[in-house]
Length: 283
Ligand SMILES: Nc1nc(=O)c2c([nH]1)NC[C@@H]1CN(c3ccc(C(=O)N[C@@H](CCC(=O)O)C(=O)O)cc3)CN21
Ligand SMILES: O=c1ccn([C@H]2C[C@H](O)[C@@H](COP(=O)(O)O)O2)c(=O)[nH]1
Image 1 (cartoon, rainbow, N blue to C red):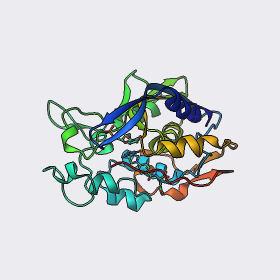
Image 2: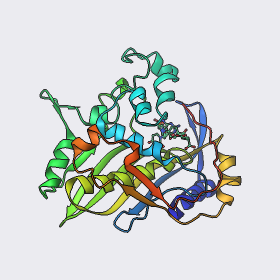
Image 3: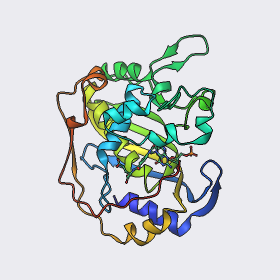
Image 4: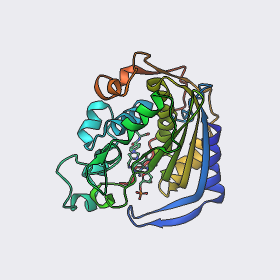
């Protein structure tokens, strides 16, 4: 939580204004931030200086792991966070590749679990990583990437957290996640939870101990219409004690995650938080 507040403060103190063509808004921006979550110590990085809808964040990442490409599937899992990008952005609505209502196109898991090979066919990166880690193998390239430069024009949005690289030291699993673009008031509140979750769940389904997760952010920004709420409301509040994150121990395989798991299989204990803040969202 301190890391998060420090980054928010740094953007306000040192950020530069950058015009963004896609959203038509200006963003106060810094380049490069490195956050670390000690999953072995159970340091769950949940924001306490406003109410965080952490179940939405978990639903998003489970949808990515399942390879969903449709906002309706995300809604069925428990989050509406993809509705606007799938259905309200005019550039995407005009895109000939859009397959109709709720389609998100080739983004995140839809490409990551079915990554096209130049010599034909496709690769399921996640299945390969799970198989390797389960056998105790880290080939120094256990990378789950969503970034395919030749397919970006076929998606409603380019992936923001676009690479997750897993490593084994003995039976301890580590994760390095990279994010190219970060909406700090809204997106990062979810992305921190997602990086923690990804290491915790991958350790559980591969039979490893979780170590640390390292989260690199390249472009970290606050949109102009979010600035006042961040500076004058959220940053005036004192953070509260970190809660604990619980995963149903019956989740043992990737298949379990793909088939029967719901948000009821996750819980947060001891979550104390300040009043909700409704930040504006830019489509
Ligand atoms: N501008 C922008 N920021 C993002 O963070 C973002 C995108 N676009 N597009 C793709 C996904 C969708 N994400 C989203 C979308 C909406 C919320 C949001 O509205 N959050 C509210 C309410 C959440 C809820 O009720 O479930 C919040 O207060 O956190 C958060 C992340 C993250 N990503
Ligand atoms: O997981 C996510 C997904 C998206 N975001 C934010 C970062 C940007 O504000 C927008 C994406 O816009 P681009 O023009 O494609 O950079 O969404 C996030 O923070 N986290």
